[in-house]
Length: 152
Image 1: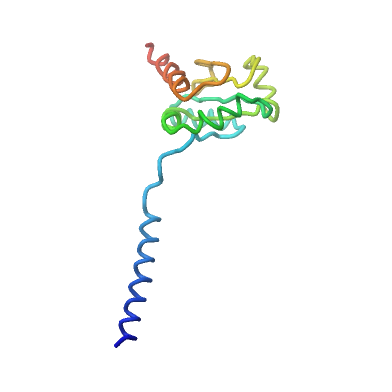
Image 2: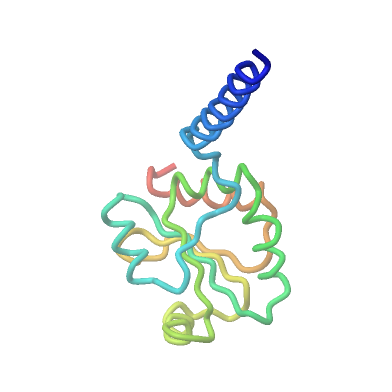
């Protein structure tokens, strides 16, 4: 009798753990914890923006730039800023000293880092700013660009 109870208990434990693992896998993903950037892919960002009818948010940075690092470590990881930018923009982060970066830096006349620019889907600048921004200021910056489109 004890062996039968032991086997039943073991089967129940295995089934319970299997069911818990299965349930955990079916849960929806958690909200974004940071702004999701496409890295060094300006043409791809423009294509996505046109397909999704969104603006492009560009983080133009240099690897040696302290305020750029602070943006990545703090502001871009703010939950509210992440939700706002991931919903409303195609986000691209571009190292302005490699790949297409130097050419874009010259074309966009970038003088300092970080430079944050919002473009329409055709690649026309809508709004830009230079320097570190906290999460609230970054969201205001993004909203200001969206409002420009509406003529507000």
